[in-house]
Amino acid sequence: MTTGNKPETSVTVEKRVNGKWCFVIKHRGVTYPAQGNFTSMLQAQAVAQTALKALEQQR
Image (cartoon, rainbow, N blue to C red; front, side, top):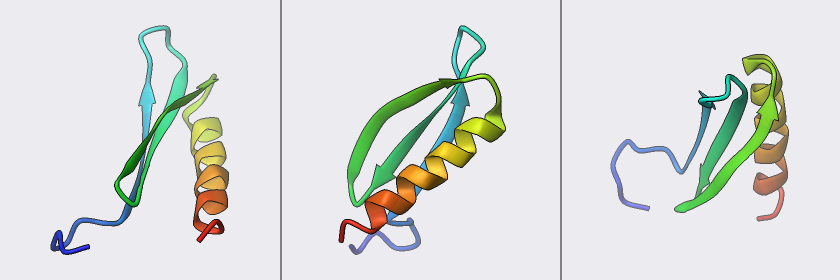
C-alpha cells in the first residue's frame, strides 16, 4: 500500500443517536459495517479489539 503515512487498519468507536456505542473497522481497504449496541465506550473498544485480532489472524 503506497498511501504514505495512512495506517493499513483503523478502528473507530462512535456513539449512535440512540445513545449506544458501536465500532467500525477498516482493514486492508475493506470497511466492515458498524457493529454492536454497547452501553459503554469501553465495551465497544474491547469487542473491537477482539474482532480486529481475529481479522489479523486470518492472513
